[in-house]
Image 1 (spheres, rainbow, N blue to C red):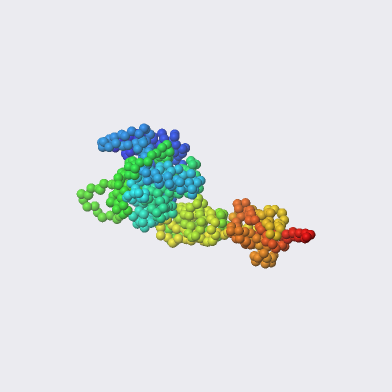
Image 2 (cartoon, rainbow, N blue to C red):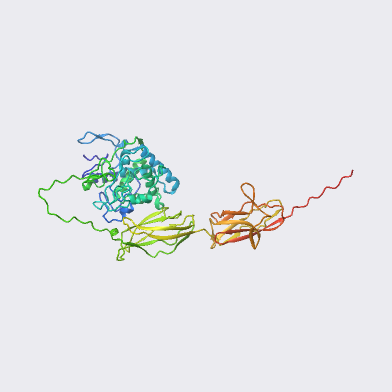
Length: 570
């Protein structure tokens, strides 16, 4: 097939040259950084080494992807050389299958509510979906959004691609030896384990479902507090999906193209890409995805396409027996156990950041530190505490000292203990657990915001409401729990059965209010107080978590006596 400049970039020796020209032409209308090479380490056709730890940190394991670029010329069907079959470009390329388009837009809406600061555009999901799987192979999905056949990437066995040993027991990719990227957004199983989402509300997280995969991709791109309206954060997010500068340029090209306009087409009628990033390795895209465990010998199913290699001709003479080559051990293969690397006690007040970080060291059986190993930190237990960026899972590569330091933890509002578990990605090594504790917000001092005397006539209501300010170590204590009780005496904290009182929602008399909480400025304003017909001096005591208490004096005066009328003369 001859290369068609201005339309679809196809396979062959001209692919890279045409792509370079096309990207350069597009870059003038795209966000700055389209051709930025500082963010990624891979160029066209390059693949991570067999022990590249960054492969497991990407969504796709840096798997191959489609390199077709958006058309530059007007939409005109052009027959391909030798086949007579037209290659439709332009408006046809702008068409996105109905169910796939709906999934992208629903994911944008969901992330707009859960992470509004991310500013995720659905066109970015469409651009990644185009590059990863050709929009689920042209929209070959059922009514629920699940692909009619699984879309699988190449086996990540280190042979031309990254080497990632099995992490899911073959549950997602059908391979119990190595991992493969799965589904329309091409997640590797170890990433799907923590990033998977239920986008269609069926109670399952299926990487083969476009609704689930699109929502998961959006969540993945929005982690770390990235703002995708910021050009630098946008580049970081895309490169985290697949660490390749050429991948970044290709996705940005489709993002700009889709932003200029798209339309809906029926499922199964979307245009199919024709070129992959690994075509220069002698592979060609497979036209049909294969089911897990059924990849024919010498071929790989597409996740961004598959590859097929012709069977070699049988030798004319029988070669002498030889020892099969052995795969060199990766750093991960040498890890025997995990050791704590000096992590201090993990405690924090609700809503605050933990001051200490978790540090774990990977070691060989002899106790030697191992660098370039992926360590996954997972928050376990009934807690709303998260890592910086809002995620409950983080993967970190060990440094030259074999130490992986987890991102900072931030305490949620739930108090109590939880666990952070460190495990080695791609290796069955016993995990290492770290205990963390969240304590309630505290106040060590309470004071009234006014010195006005609180008085009332029996049977009436107090003119002023009691307002307090809570502080902790001199600073306003927000979100601190408090209880207000009208007590019998200074040395008797039992609730009084007479005197001033509050009213509940039904207007009934109550003399204890629990579940109160200070506002963002540490202020607490109590409801209106009323007085029964008992005169005297009474006490209101407010206590908070942390031990701060304040006793307020309330005075109730007797009602003025009513003069009796004089008898009339009769």
